[in-house]
Length: 102
Image 1 (tube, rainbow, N blue to C red):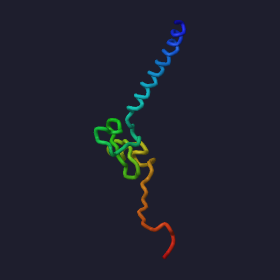
Image 2: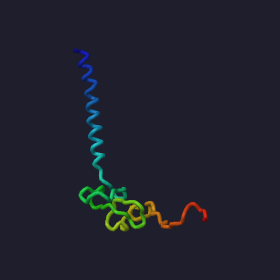
Image 3: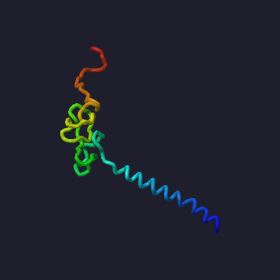
Image 4: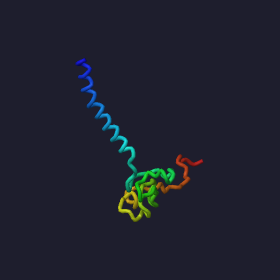
């Protein structure tokens, strides 16, 4: 009997730790995008990645979508106002890349 009491004393703190870690993961998993966070524009409006007051947008000078206020250009965040985001690939050339002439 004494050994079973020792085992339960060891496992009680472990169960408490497991409960705290699980709760922490659930809270992190429910985080919505803050201003300047990347987002998925293909989600329905009622399932937005972005916090309240922000929408998933692609600023005109960017190649990716970010959670930004409307208009995005009014934001001081570099991803929303286009200063920090990756630029779209502007090359529309159809020049062959093999470099050879026939």
